Image (cartoon, rainbow, N blue to C red; front, side, top):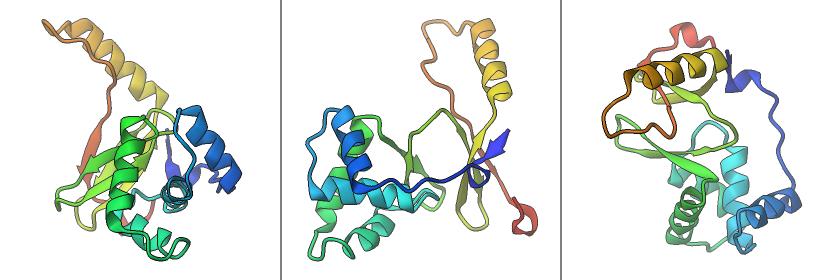
Length: 152
């Protein structure tokens, strides 16, 4: 089991971001490169507003609507996902590999949590339950709690 903070973070170049976009069948535009780059750079589940503030430093005059629309496209294509929070703010997550979320309700902090053993337990559990008329395609946990002493 490992938290995202403990994993090595690589900030890709614009060319690497463009390659990723093209792999998902997306047209490469400066706006898409900047939004995806900001999502990668702001790796702690940023809001659209966080991403907008980052992107306008690179592309002054860019509208918030363009950022929201670009994020919607990234979600539709499976590059990113939306995370609803208890505060009502939608946050975004880059999908790199299956993981769960640890949500600190005291400060809205979200950490990615990777645990292959837990994944296997959950898959086996739902396989055994055989919920009538339902086939799980993906299992993600959103665990609500609080980090003690801000130590991860």
